[in-house]
Length: 318
Image (tube, rainbow, N blue to C red; front, side):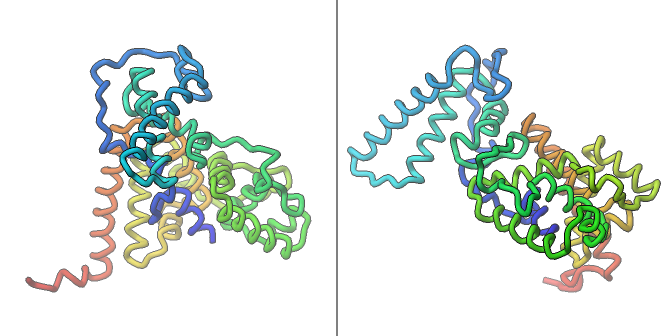
C-alpha cells in the first residue's frame, strides 16, 4: 500500500489527474521575458501588492465572460471544462500582464492559489482545516499521527510495535489504514493526500513513537544526509530505483541494500525536494534535474541488464 501511495504522491508511473494544474511551461510563450522588472508580491497569495485580489478576479471574469459570450453568440456549445479553460488562460494572461513577470513566477502563483482557482491542492501550500470533514480524526487519530505511524512502519518497524507504543489493538491500525487511504481517494481536492505528503516530508513524529528507532548503518546515515543536501545524488538514486523496478527488482529494497536508506526516509526526502520545487519553481533547474535522472536511469538500466544477461532484444537482428 505504501509504495503505491508514495508513487502517487511523487509522480512515479502516475499521470497528472488534474488537467488544469499541469506545471510544465514547455508550450508557454513567454512574451515578457526581456521586460522583467522587480515586483513586490504578497508572501501568501503571490499576487502583486500593487493591486487587490478582488480587482484581479474581476478583470479575469470580465475578459473571460466576454469571450464566452462571443463564443456562444457564434453558436459554440461550451461545456464546464471549456469555461474552466477560458478562465485558466485569462488568469495567466492577466497575472503576467499586471506583474510583468516571467512564466516561472506565474507557475509559482498558480501553485499558491491552486485550491482557490482549480479546486486542487499543490504540495507545499496546504494548511490543515479543522472544518474539513476529510480531516476528522479516526478513532482519535488525526492525519498527522497516522502519517507518523506510516513513517515508522515503512522504515521497517513492525506494525505491532507501533500499535503497542500507541496503546491500541492492531485492529485499530487496520481500520486507520483503511479509512485514511479511502478518504484520500474520495477527496477530489487532494487535500488529504497532499497534506499527508507534506507531513511525510517533515518526517513528523508523535511523543508515543519517539523511542521507536529504525536501524540504520553508518553508511546509510551518511547517504541519507547526502540525498537531503545533494539534489544530483537524490536524482541518481531515484533513477536507479526506477530502473530497478523496470527490471523486476524491488527498487526500494535495492536502495536499502546498496545505500542503507529505508523506504520511509527516501520518500520523506523525495517529498522535501518536490515541495521545495513547487514553492521555488525554476523551469531551467527542473529540466536539468529531470534530464540528469533520465541519464542515470539509463545507466542503471544497462547495469541491471548486464547483470541479468542482457536485454532480450539484444539478440534480435533486423
